[in-house]
Image 1 (cartoon, one colour):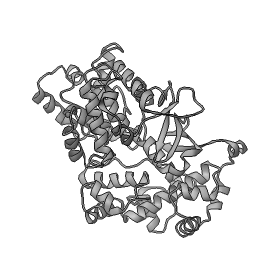
Image 2: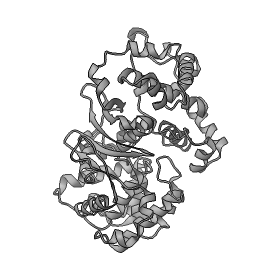
Image 3: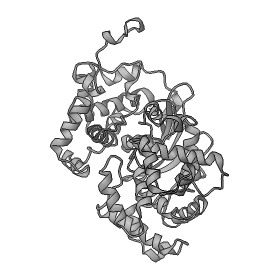
Image 4: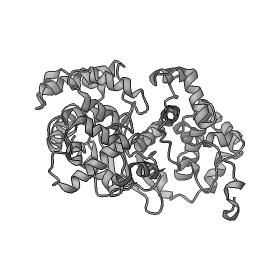
Length: 452
């Protein structure tokens, strides 16, 4: 629609791309709807539906029944279908198909992957099914999308990586995000520069690496991934979005936080690319400085991690899985200089994840998972809540007992602190980051007040 006619009265609005497709529309070839950020809902139904969308985006239904996904989220399959229909205007299967088609459209435009590789990377079980659904929904052949795309460099055909784009809603305080991650970067697994982030990746049986840098002329990140990650591309991109909190709606959050958010518009809550990795790092950070926690985590990875060859001298290891750590004796972990209580906590966490008793995934049942974490030895309320904030993606965590929060507010009484924080609901996780940031401005970089 031309700009002069694009007033609201001339437009029809749909709750999702899938709903628009169901009404007979196909995605615009110019505005790239496949790059739109995800949803960040705060009401109960919306958050549940957004959790389903995140899981679908991450490939949850490739090898998992919808009923099992509902059980993970702590609701019935019927209720989950109703929540998705109410929020997005379509059934979960329609949402799944739309996501796969939009990812395929993106890969057709941005990569030189073969049609078969595009189909499989997008989650289709066969090229025939991919072609049929693409034609039915878009009334185009996949080859027409590729032919209409900007010319790709011939050199891409011999490269051992692919490049994709993920979008976000502005503003994004990229430097603050990188600063937080840089201070906690795990040697051998992560590398952070002034403008870029890189890491090794283990997703299922696939092993590889990725990097992310901002795109100068639009609100997006350029994500470069090794070809080995193509079979798990949906999950890899979903994890990138989770790590950088790209589904956030910063203007809505800032409006609610008021003066607290003025100094750092676009401040995000750093997520977790690997939930177990972040949880272990959190346990090691209990009651020690960030620097000391980094030293312990680096020893942990060098001892138990798996070596990996990459094009980067700083990316050399993969994080050990929970299953691998569960088979290690606590004394071997303690021998790395880790306090015995924390060694036992790490082992207990690994065993709980390996046995399926605890699931560290965004959008899960937060209250249940926090309770399960606190039932493990060596994991208290602060640690469980911090994991909920970064790993589970809870936007409303407030660490009222945290020393840095108390110093930032100039208050020590827990009831008074919670009363102050009530005004920031349901975005108290973002308030927590803003308070820590305000403390950084007042104190030296070596301050121990900003934890973990």
